[in-house]
Amino acid sequence: MEGQRCLCIVVFLVHTAIGAGEGSTQTPSTERPELNDSNELTVSFPPLEDIYTSTLEKHFATENNTLVTSQIGSTALLPCVIRNIGDGIVSWIRRKDYHLLTVGLTTYSSDQRFQAIHLQHSEDWTLKVRFVQKRDAGIYECQVSSHPPTSIFLHLDVVEARAQISGPTEKYLKPGSTLRLQCSVVQTTEAPAFVFWYHNSRMINYDVERGINVTTDTEQRLSDLLIPAASVSHAGNYTCVPNNAVPASIYVHIFNGENPAAMQSSSPSYIHLNILHSLYTTIAFNMLR
Ligand SMILES: *[C@@H]1O[C@H](CO)[C@@H](O)[C@H](O)[C@H]1NC(C)=O
Ligand SMILES: *[C@@H]1O[C@H](CO)[C@@H](O)[C@H](O)[C@H]1NC(C)=O
Ligand SMILES: *[C@@H]1O[C@H](CO)[C@@H](O)[C@H](O)[C@H]1NC(C)=O
Ligand SMILES: *[C@@H]1O[C@H](CO)[C@@H](O)[C@H](O)[C@H]1NC(C)=O
Picture 1 (cartoon, rainbow, N blue to C red):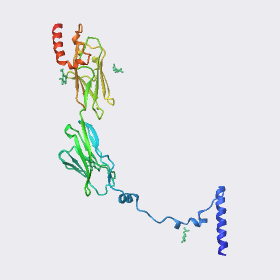
Picture 2 (spheres, helix red, strand yellow):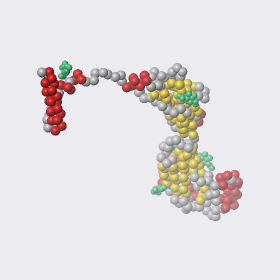
Picture 3 (cartoon, rainbow, N blue to C red):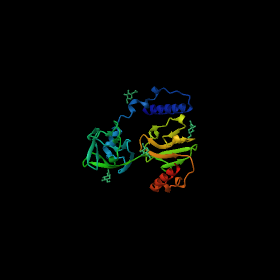
Picture 4 (cartoon, rainbow, N blue to C red):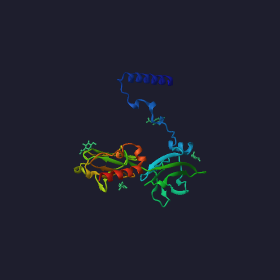
């Protein structure tokens, strides 16, 4: 009897399977005792996180001796990513004077420009240095408490962004000619927010009615000043002032008459002959008077 019952069930199952294969028979779940809930997996595993913390070692994901370059005045971010930190605490130490900057999220330095940045559940303990100065350059240690403590070192290089006006530092033009000055911001790690041009002490970015056209592409770190028809009133000292870089100046002479040979300033060697040139210029100007 028991054998026959079993056979019956098998036949039923085969029938159901074929029926399902034909896609015509709807089999209510109550007719499938083999899919009883008690068959569900009842063995539970510890969360993945626990396996990792117990089997993987604490280690730095930031490369040791990483170099970070920041320009003066900007915000420097020194990364320190630690996997499986457990209950370890991260401290930042400035190596040149062994000054303890931060422990966990607390800044220990009286210099509040230093701050540890850490989002909850993240593995990153970045050191943020605001308004970077030249003296901040050097080695910083990201140390994790353990026995013994382990550290990586980050090198902060501080560069001085500066404006640069192409060509010689003095320009000689005849009235009516085009004055074009191109200023680029070099040695930068971040784009300027704005670039101001000064004619002597006047800011001239918006002096369109005085025939001045300034176009700035901050992303390209470039600013052009264009005066299509320069007049004597346009002579003087022009200064390119990016908000976050050292300014650059150029002196523009506009005068009637012949260009004395000494005044042809397009040769690059002119720059090296600056003193001699100034002398020539003085003589030439006195002669022109
Ligand atoms: C599953 O089978 C067990 C016996 O193995 C039974 O006690 C239980 O009632 C069944 N559950 C369902 C939902 O059929
Ligand atoms: C990082 O490099 C320094 C030497 O520059 C070494 O003393 C230190 O042990 C290194 N840290 C790690 C985690 O390898
Ligand atoms: C200013 O110069 C740019 C090119 O450098 C030009 O596209 C623009 O039309 C000029 N604007 C005026 C007001 O002349
Ligand atoms: C031009 O102006 C700048 C900024 O005011 C100044 O530093 C520089 O000495 C001036 N140059 C000349 C030649 O007057």
